[in-house]
Amino acid sequence: MRQETFTVISNRTLAPGTLEMVLEGDVSGISRPGQFVNLRLDGFFLRRPISVCDWTEGRLRLVYKVLGQGTAAMADYPAGKQLDLLVGLGNGFDLEKCPEHTLLVGGGVGTPPLLGLARRLAEQGKHPAAVLGFNTAGERILTEDFQSLGLRVTVCTADGSAGIPGLVTDGMAAVGDYNYVCACGPEAMLRAVWTLCGFGGQFSFEERMGCGFGACMGCSRKTVHGMKRICREGPVLEKEEIVW
Amino acid sequence: MVSTADTRVTLCGIPLDNPVIPASGCFGYGWEFAEYYDINCLGTFSFKGTTAEMRPGNPTPRIAEYSGGMLNAVGLQNPGVDAVISRELPRLAEVFHKPVMANISGFSIEEYAVVAKKLSACPQVGWLEVNISCPNVHGGGMSFGTDPVQAAAVTAAVRRVTDKPLLLKLSPNVTDIVSIARACVDAGADGLSLINTVLGMRIHLKTRRPLLANITGGMSGPGIFPLAVRMVYQVSQAVHVPVVGMGGVSSAEDVLELMLAGAAAVEVGAANLTDPFACRNIIQALPEAMKRYGITSLSEITGGAHG
Image (cartoon, rainbow over all chains, first blue to last red; front, top):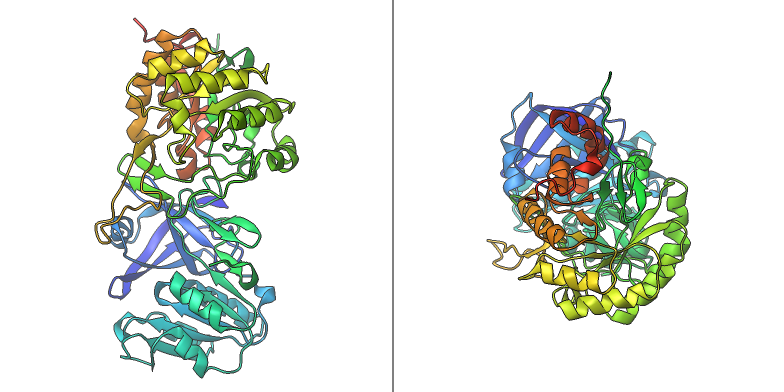
C-alpha cells in the first residue's frame, strides 16, 4: 500500500450513472489486477474504495457507478483536480493460477477489474474469454475494450435488450471451452457462478469498508480458513474457501 | 538558545516518548502498521480488544458514515487470547520495542479475569486497558460500564490477577460518567481511559432499513471530540488517577486540547482508518504546535484548563 497524490485527467460518463475516471500519478504500488484504491473525497470522512479497472505507466483508470453521495461527488470532479489515494490495496487476482482458457465473468460495475486481468492474461499469451452481464443494453460498459484485447465477449442482459437474454450463468452455458473462472459482480451473481462451475476459480467480493487496509476489521467475511478481511486477504477469494 | 519541545509524559509510572497512542480497534495488533512506518515513534498503542475465545464479530455491513465521522459495529472480532499470545505478540515484538497496552474485553467477570491474567503475564504488556464500554456486543461489553456496581466488580476481579497498571475504558453512553469513574478507582483502577464510541444509528433512505446489520453502532471521529473533551474534563477533576483521553482526536492541536482538559496521554482512533499515517503525522506536528502555544514540556499541561 502506498499513499500518493493523483491528478484527474478525465472523468466521463460511459453509461447512465457509470463513469470512467482517468488519473495521473505513481501507480507503482499496484501489483495485481483486482486490487483497489481508496480515495479521500472532500467533505467525507471515510475514503471510497474503488476497484482498479486498468493501469499503465503513470496512468490509472477507474470505472465506478454513482451509488451514493460520495460517488455522486466524484462524478463532478473536473480534470486537473488532485486526489489523495491509497493505492495497491487488496490481494487482487493471482494470474499464475489462471490456466490457458480462463473465463472472466463480470456483472455490471463488477466488470471493470476484469479488464486489467484480461490485459495481463493476454500479455502472458493466454486466451481468456469474457461473459459480461448487465441489466439492460444501455448499461453495457467496456465490451469493446475486452474485444480489442482479442477476447471473445458474450454479453447477457437481464431484460433481453442485447446479447443473450438472462443472467451471466445463461451466458456461461453458451461458452464451452474453459475450465476456470474469475468473477466479479454482485454477491448473488458470484454465488450463482460459484454454484454452476464444477472447477476452480477466483471470486472478487465487495463489502462496506472502514479503512480499506486491514486495520478496522469492518469488512470481514467468513471463509473455510476463518475470518478474512475483504480489504486485505481479499477482495479475491479462492473458490474452495468461500462460505455462503 | 534553541528551545526544545519536550513531548515526554508518564502514564501510570511508565514513561512515554510522547502522549500519542493509537486506540484499540483502529490499529490491529500493530505489526500491520509497521509496514507503513516505524511504529516505535508512538508513545505506545492499544491493541485490538481481546477476549477469551475467538470471536468472528458481527454480520456485515459493520461500517457506516456520518458528517462528523463514522459508525462501526465490528463486534470485537479477534482471534482469542491464546492466539494473540502465541501469534500476534511475537510478530509485534519484531517491530515494536516498547511496552504495549493490552485491551481486554469479556462477557462475564470471570472472562475478564482469565484474559487479564494471561496477558498480564506477557513481558511485552505494559498496561491493561479493560474495555467495559463496547456498544456493539450483547450481554457483555457496555453493560458492565453503565452500572457502577458492575464496573467495580470487573475492576476488582482484574485487580486480583495483575500487578501491572490497570486502566478501565469507560463508555460515554451513561447519564453520569463520574460515578462510573469513581467506582472503578475505588475498586483498584490505576487509571481510566475515555471515551469509547457513542451509540448511534443510520437508516438507508432507499431500503428504509438500518445501514448496519447490527442496527446500532459506535460513533467515532471529529464529531464526538467535544463530548470527549467535556467528559475528560469532568472525570479528571473528580478522580486522582491518570486519565487517557480519546474521542475524535485527529491533530496535534486536539492532543493539546484533551491534555488541557485533563488527559495524561491521548489515544487516536478513527483518524488511523482514514489516514494510516495519522499518528506519525500528529507526533511530528506536536513540537511545532507546542511552540505555537508556548508549551515547552507537554507533561505540565495536563489539566491546565481546570479552574
